[in-house]
Length: 166
Image 1 (cartoon, rainbow, N blue to C red):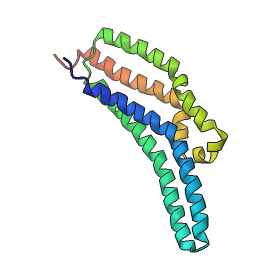
Image 2: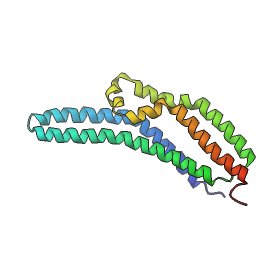
Image 3: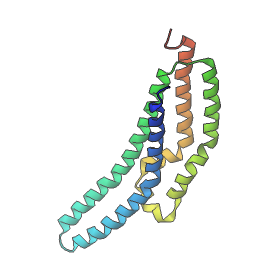
Image 4: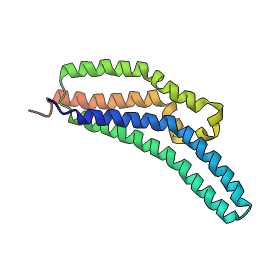
């Protein structure tokens, strides 16, 4: 029986990235609501304590944006590593091309729920704090096309060279 652990790890990682994208505005809404009220209440007692709460609040909201971007980047790097490690075959190139076309065709439907959450009026402040994530979502199709092209070139080069197992 073939070991499929790496396949489950990749699928799990993709689910984690999508989950982060969906949960980011919701978690930031909770944090913004809680810490803004807390900062105002503490400001009546100590302005220094309020400034420290605001500092932690700013760091946390910036952290979410970087966590999502880094998870996305790690996912892309894993794809490129696996593209180099795969033993390319002409039939695999055909299946890769077909799956790339389907991926590009269905990409808007994958991003639609995330864009719906990001477009809600209630999350406008939180979405404005996720600048890197907004960029990734707005350019998702173009980024996906670039990733497909680069990984396709890598695998085509391996196929023309004769694969890694000579």
